[in-house]
Image (cartoon, rainbow, N blue to C red; front, top):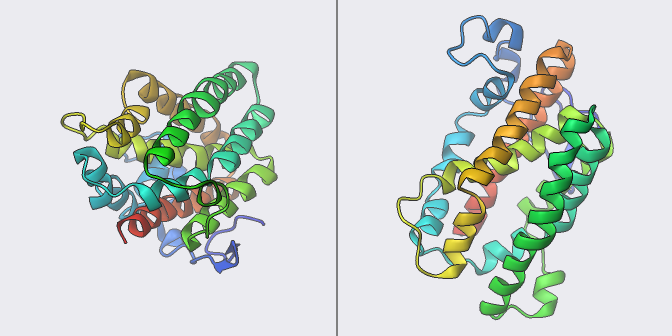
Length: 248
């Protein structure tokens, strides 16, 4: 799929919403001339409002931080992203334009996704009494299908800026809500999920993703910048939709 301004596409068979108002959003070169924080990642984040704020302040995210969220459906659906997200990280290693960028992706892939995070999922789903069938092949919610499709589209594009955009949304949104936690919840289901998405190491990881977008984004032509904007905004919309689904 070609990511174009205001284009209708498909994500898992579901029509993708046209990017409402994107044509009116100023080009990066114009926006940065008056912006308080004139970096590319902030241009993207600002353009993703109000979905961005709705996602990082979502009631379900707040319930995770408070230790009261019903995690069963949420984690079953989220576990379905592990393979697709792993492939997207692999695409980042392949598509990155320099060795210094490849190393953090490889390190995060090996140490966090395939070890720490995958281990959490297995312990959490077992504690929730989820059987093997629901763990590996549940009925997918429409938003899960759409988000997996978006990740696959970014991966298959082999475009480093598009891969970065989806990865950055997935991690930055989670840092946004998890870092709002006042005190760690008691049960491991909630506490470890918060800990996986907050703290100095995760902040550094998100900082790296943002810095890469800030490095490569300004050098893109305006049409390519708009393609990054399209996929970034769609990813934020889906993050918000995923919390809506979990909240029920």
